[in-house]
Length: 265
Image (tube, rainbow, N blue to C red; front, top):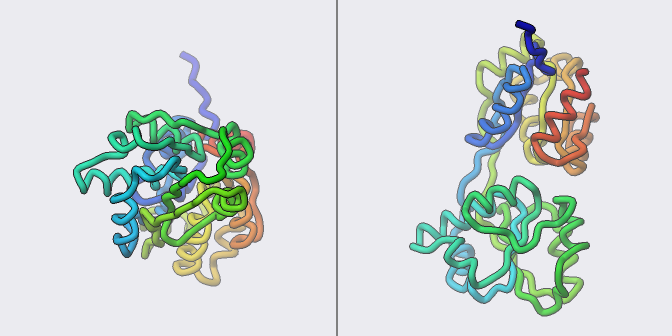
């Protein structure tokens, strides 16, 4: 029987994601033949101060639209609604929902909610460019990470007359350490590539690697390829590592897989 040639056979790949969110990406790279090392670069939980979130929840039916920038925004808003005996599905009859990102749309549909609007290119710029109605005088809620992020959507909507309220529904923090198995793989210089799925995973990974390896880091990373899921992540790679070797054409883990396979083939 002819052996099936897996495109990433014998490749050692490091995946940087939030703690507890690596398994899905790990599976698709394992299926392509790669051996995956975990490097959780984020710890995600509720924001430090829950009061603003609770105040928004108490008046959530006043909004015309909710725009979710990430699946974590959906997860933690819904989690807090459930804490209070409600749910996003129950409340969603009162407003429309837009999402940025294919993964975010999928996460919403897994909660049995269909987004009213998904931009064609799954990007913030695309969302504001193709928004399906006039935004003037609309009350719009944007649940987001406590430490902030891309303000393009908010600034654009405000400039066009929308009444925008943002609220921290979760926070992402840097872990204290790297798993020992991953540290040893870097030390033995057997890692072929690191995959980055967000700007924050780039920054936190750079911090953790510097913390563990110090002056050795430049030598350790010399032959390691750096792959990015999209333009913003690429910019952070350039800032923190001075380079990126490949950027995904499609801003998903499937797109990142394809970019990785194309590079090594």
